Image 1 (tube, helix red, strand yellow):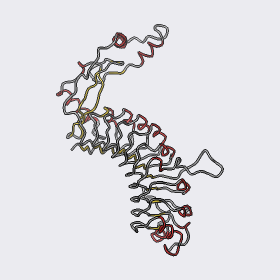
Image 2 (cartoon, rainbow, N blue to C red):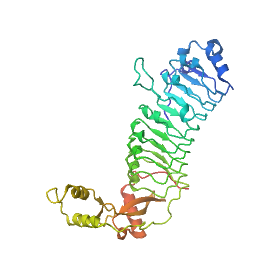
Image 3 (cartoon, helix red, strand yellow):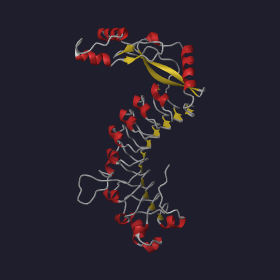
Length: 370
């Protein structure tokens, strides 16, 4: 985790720029009294302070005098009884805002977390790199955080959030997204667009499936999925070369191959399309209607290496166990064109072993199943 400190490397200088009122049993009145009387806190001026620690007190609100600390970069409000974050907090040049373990709801947060410039009522900027709202009473993903384009670390664990914003893709600087201990039942495809993401914490939720886009998170190092309702993982997850930690314990992961899942008979269009693709023909708009050309181009290849077939809308969903580090067998979902393409377990083991050998340089080093 990055540490955001004063530019000075001098310890005394940093201490002079820090005010620590943590664990002092302060309420709003006594805190305002302390902050308004520099001699009590041995301060020079409010402009000297870059770090303020107000954790573990009895604060239900923040005093107005806080606005005077116009150079404040780190503010720790954790473990109080806050029911509101005032709009004025957005006018501070904060890099780190920690407000975990309070009584904040969605309506408690400012409608916008951007710093408004004088004369500019529409736009705004933000210096925030770390935001921690864990352990509060949020029931919706706070949409205003998607405005924070510089944010690297977002902690929303221990709330009652049921879904993740589809606009999460806007947060392209995000390195850590922590949503453990919520009520999330679905992960949007947009999560796969977070190209800088290194840690994704989704443990202790109600998730049954992960989107295929997870495989696009090329910088992902840690994926925590324990205590969910997962039965399988997207097969392309093995392509995540930097993934070193995968936590899967306490999921109803399948313990045997799931064969032919309620396969419906293919339509005549599907059968005709498969025959055309198998023949190697490539009809164009001059041969068949454009809609059929587009349909033929939408064909998906069967993942069985011994099959050259394709499928369109009709497929067999099958669970294949892939070996990790020669110790764990992780169930991954694959799509086949026919139940005949399901390999016997012995062949599947051999295939997985070969694949593991070919990619041993980047297989996960830590898989937590128990």
